[in-house]
Structure formats: C-alpha cells, structure tokens
Length: 238
Ligand code: MN
Image (cartoon, rainbow, N blue to C red; front, side, top):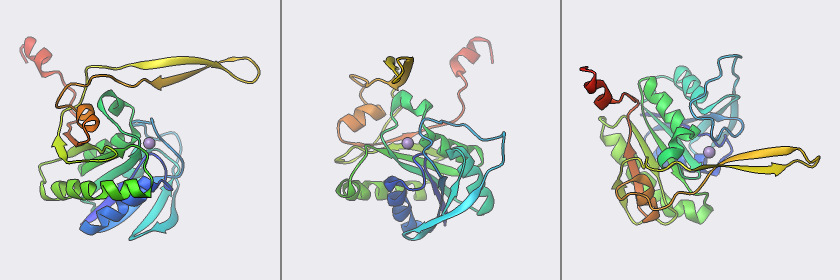
C-alpha cells in the first residue's frame, strides 16, 4: 500500500516525521510537504505560478520531497507523481484542529484535497509535543491508522489527539461557537498593526471533537465535503 504523507507545518516538522514513521507499518510511505510553514492556509492552491518539487533529506523509512506551495498543492503533486496512492495522511499538526478551527486548517485541507482527487484521507492534529509526548500518543495514532486501513467506507476523517490520551471516541464537529478576536498593537514606528487570532472556546457540547479532547479522548470525526443544506433545499421542494 502506498501512503502519501503531508502537513502544513513544513517538511522539517517533528509531527510529520512521527506520522510518516507510524504510517510505514502499513506500506510504502512518501512525504511531500511544504518547504515552509503553511498553517492557516486552508484549501488554497497555487495557480498563478509553477511549483517546484525538490528532494528533501529522507526521513526514517520514507523518502521526502518539498514543494514551494500549499498543503493542497503538495497533495496534488504528490499523488500525480507517485501513483497509485491509496491513502493520504496529513499532520501531525503542531496544534489541534477542533470545531470551527477546521475551516482554516491547512492540515485538514490537505486531506480534503486528497478526497476531492478521489483518495481516502485523514488529518491528524495534537498539541505541540516533545519526544516523550509523541511516544505517548503513538499507540493511539497507530490504532486510528489501523481503523482507516481496514474500513474503505471511511473517506475523510479529522483526528485530534490530546496530550495524554486514555482512549478513542467517535465525535461530531463542534460548530456552536466561533470566537475570533482582533487584537491591536503597534510596530516600532508607532504604526497600528492587528493580530487576527482564534480565541479559546468554552464549554463544548458533549460528543463533539472539542469535548473529547478536553476529556483526554482521541477524537475521530468522519467528515464529508458536500456542504449542501439539505433541509433548506427540501423547503424549496428539492
Ligand atoms: Mn500547522
């Protein structure tokens, strides 16, 4: 089985290394990742200029390539140049992608792009961890990969891991809150600047991705790409 691994934190991310190593238990792994950080790039593609696909230092049990583009670009090039890929994994992101954060996530968008191209895919995210932290979550990542490999009906899943997992749970996306914040500051010349940042969320609904992680469970959320509001459509008789 050929598994393409990518991320949005860039080719030198420790999370990428861990995911590639764990995926290699299930087949041949190739890493194709952005040459610089692309966090919060969501599903952007680079259509206005050509892309470079260059060799990067090989990782443990995987060859590696870097692309001067977005996570979605990496999936497009990676699957085009190395066929046939069966699974695409993205991550492990250096930070969770829960609830409304998923709209901005380059990690999840890479997996979404893989699904658009006809592949099955998963996005993995966790708080930034040290070596011991990655050793702690590794058995759970392995468990999730095992579920994905053996269930071809799962097309797209968003996986979030807490720092100290005590089990896996299936969840839905927490969509109740979206609190972003604009924070004003100044540059050294006294000119106004602004940070646009995601504010932490409170009291997530039980059964959601955020709730699971706050209760130390690994959250697995099956997702679909069709955003059609079926209820609204039905009101118009369709
Ligand atoms: Mn990231």
